[in-house]
Length: 532
View 1 (cartoon, one colour):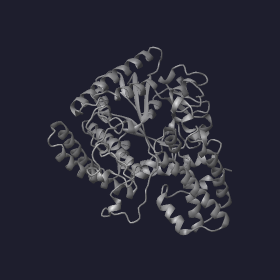
View 2: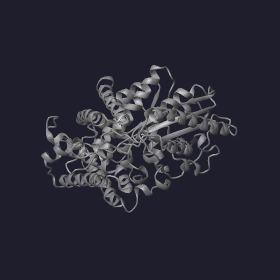
View 3: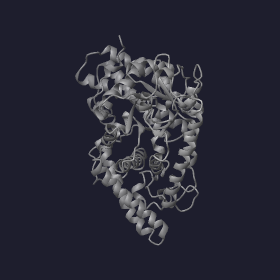
View 4: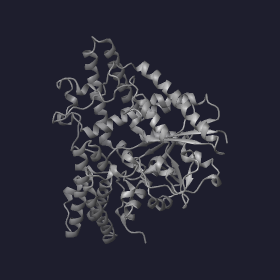
């Protein structure tokens, strides 16, 4: 084997479904000047997470620096990134930021440090617009697919709508829909099938495994304690994969690497991503970043550090490189120690949300780039994708273990998705899932308007299964939005169910709903039929 130690970086790229349909949307209409707060989160994700990561890969590729990462990109995010309306709104949002930047350059002209930062952000936004429209042609999925073809990026599949699978395991039709519907999406965007399956929130239960095998996924990832509490306990901890009794490979997330990076990201020298001038300047200056109700939104112009000093990009960049060196040396030291007790090459698998890379930690893309540029200076070490690592292992050396029920939520099990803030969802969801199967069985061969209604019912069920809504309710973030999304999807499904029972459905209402919830355009409701 050409390496003795390995690190695998796995990023989950996912956002809750959002599409605020505006009839006859036009940049010239005053009412379209403002996007919703939820849409702005999508736009920030593009500008602060996806574009910076792609630019890092572009630079490494241009400089012939080896790199390998894995990305678990959700079908929901794939859909939103290719949605024509959201693309237009994103460009309009960028134009608002660029126009605001011109005002900031004038406003801060008397303060040299702030003015330099305003110029930096202004230039970056202009570069983002050029990169998005010209280099990537508004298709970030295609850019990822390019690096996949180059063997630099591994794409992991995941659920249709980020469902917390342990909570729908009793309904086989729902699990098969969550796994089958994305298959065509991944084939369309990325060509060949995926070997790995990302469990939303790393929510593992043994009841999921037959579906992983049925859809030909060879491995998945569980949180640290899910593997360590396995039966029997893994002899090599999270440094080496295990195999379930039914033959699925399991990789354990490395807790310490996640902890170390989170701790490093809180350094006082780094930019404070929460402190934006959109929350501080008078309303008349930030009018394009105010909602109709007067709610303030971020402008992207942030001048302060986590330590409340004025942000210095050069010092922060140097600190990111210093932290990359520290992380690499510490992790390799741990792997070297582990290798003394193993015959195989130990693996450190860092798995986390992609929005920690830029959106939450502004300097993280620089940190990641520094990691890959430094890696060549360490002997016997390699960054590797999970699939490549598994391929290089001797199957006979892999222990058979049954992982424990677990997730990456608060306290490691399921309380994030089931407590007093969100438990009301499930009694309605369980009944609706049973009704969806009933509809698929009752109307197996329908066409026309009835088939459209059944397909939309399937979309609404999938959207109502999203773990994003109970997660946001638990964290008390965007609670009104999350409640409206969960209630709305369940209400829409019930309306369709009752309309099909009475043999009448409003074409106008259905058409409006199809435009608003337009995810999975090629969905076939028959996926919810019982397997014979």
